Amino acid sequence: MPKIKSKSAAKKRFRFTATGKVISAQAGKRHGMIKRTNKQIRNQRGTTILTPADTRIVRTFLPYG
Image (tube, rainbow, N blue to C red; front, side):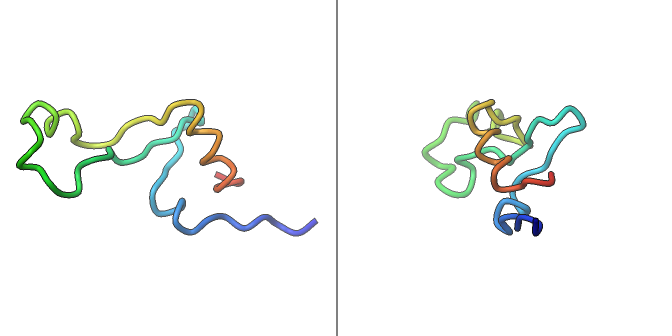
């Protein structure tokens, strides 16, 4: 069997933790910060762990991750 190709877009956007969870950047932080509250901007710093449902989707994109 040949190897399965990984999605290049997913390689740039997601990382795996040692326990197999998926890390991604916070959503909603690209533009339009004026209309967001300061609390929301603070809480969107850094990265977040994806939900189990989203993790299953990302695993299909990155089979060897």
